[in-house]
Amino acid sequence: MRQKKIRGIRLSALWFVIGLMAITFVVRQIEVIRIQRHVAEIEAEIDHFRMSNSALQEQVETLKSRDHIEKIAREKLGLVMPGEVQYIPVVNDDKGE
Image 1 (cartoon, one colour):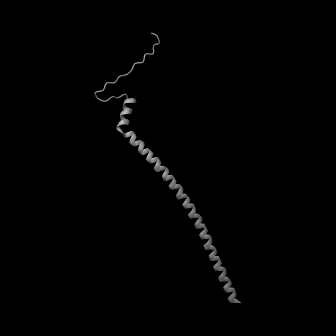
Image 2 (image 1 turned 90 degrees about the vertical axis):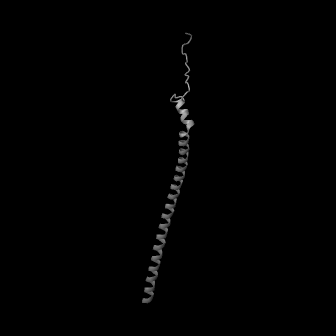
């Protein structure tokens, strides 16, 4: 009888340990899934920033080009190349005078 009681206690303890292990496993799996989702979100954000960085790099290259600098110098700053003569058209606002 005593052996049955000891065997029952050992069996209960075994089931208790198995239950704790199962609960621990489930909790860890949930944590792993949460971390995997977070990693996927961060990877998507990295891809977005890489594309944005690439577009900005292209824009920088365009802005640094000699043609673009010359265009801005002529159109916005009114500059001319050495040896060129700048002509400024005069618009007459007088109506009939």
